[in-house]
Image 1 (cartoon, rainbow, N blue to C red):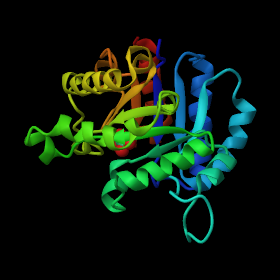
Image 2: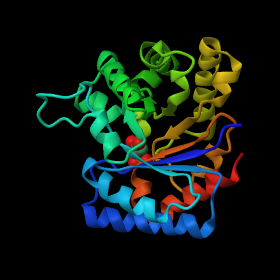
Image 3: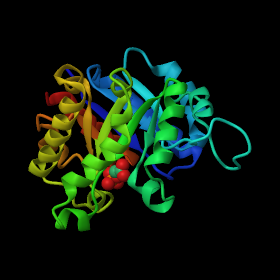
Length: 260
Ligand code: PGA
């Protein structure tokens, strides 16, 4: 069966020293609680990856804790000032990369072709992909939320083959729920997650579709994680603001460890 996975998205927050303290405190809580059955990924600023990788190696034990980046370049290497390649991200210690976050789609106008190039780069460097999908409030109000998510999956994730798709985690993040303190209701989240599962079944068959983790993101906190993650097709969370406090993030991971 699928394990639950909880992923921190620190976004553009913390200087290195703060990040080290937050990371070490989060690891300490995880170790003490011996939460072995839940995967945890910290998607941190590029500038932190290498240093945090060092402390991860020291304290790792049997915990399933990994580092991730929040993006990578669509190009392999060369004259792309300011870009960070997937190879560099992997070299710095990451094993996951967030691709297609709505903030990248919105502020950097990232559309399907560029996302595909980024994913190709990730796979060439053996990185797992956390692929974000989700509708805006206008799309939901117009009743187009499922259509929007279907398109985001079909244009990008579903071009990959049976083996490649298994290196994806799908993150459903309704844009209106991100940083808004208004998460989706558990029923609305489950409706979309079940829809995504059905699309996966239609494209890849039952066995593969059942293995793929579909996680929820958007104002997920320790107050609402239990009811959202208890839903049958919700396999964990992508946590922004609430991952910046070690106790709060740990409480969400504990919740994920308790629900099936
Ligand atoms: P949030 O962000 O938890 O602060 O809403 C989630 C995300 O954007 O990944």
